[in-house]
Image (cartoon, rainbow, N blue to C red):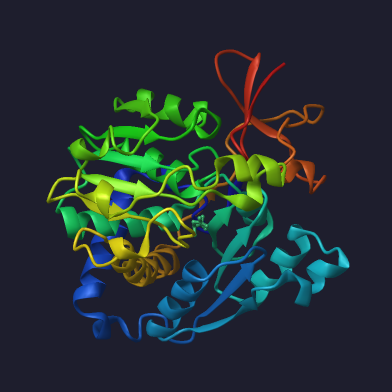
Length: 360
Ligand code: ASP
């Protein structure tokens, strides 16, 4: 299925050269933001935030304003017709006729892809449930490029809620495309990185190991990427409480890290990094959030200027097959074509919206 608009749903829909171009433009903007002040004069960006956000929403809005454009949207679906039962299809159809670009965040995996199927303007995925967060990854790539000087040959530790953390999913998919990157996944057995992400890492020729503690990994890392335990994605409060506070990065653990380590975090931080780490020059998370504006400026410019069509669904539609993931958009918006990629013959299918696998 093709759309005449250029969407960003998953970074891996584009070649690495495209991400590099966006990141490089982000760096140029950072060095001289005023030069870009009229790039989007007269353009309107809509932000549809069905889920809470501070940095992503505000950095997108700031980005558009700094490019000379205007913004509309909602950050609380209760104040929109969503509360009256409107589908993503209808909201998207209408808002995309008001705006030149639409930025959507939603608690359900695959929602941004669903929006892209009907939108009459480009759609940018600003986080879909526990699935992906491509613009956080662009932010992270710009941070690594500036602060480490490279996107290759890095040993990256990822710590915390690796099963539900969409930022680490997108980042693994991206960084495994660059040469000689190694991942160290630090989590409890319950919160390990999903199998499909590990398969992508292997297929891209990168390696990973799984460990249980920060202490055993930190000394070998170039980057430690901390994540919050995603309370809102747990089935019960008990399950969440069992994981809460497992990983806390503090000054004592930082002593074990190298001098050239950097600590990243997509934020918000809850209690996984103690505040006294903030003064350590290796703590990069506030700088990282600042870089988000520049890279989002670069992304908005690229998407509005390139105007390339996108392939929205590449798999095969199986009308009678249901995705097994209750938090997949196809189980919430019934009209969506049930599209799957076949993995190893017709018997193993992967949902194109949320990547959940299913044997048929
Ligand atoms: N802000 C990030 C996200 O939207 C990280 C988080 O919420 O923990 O996924």
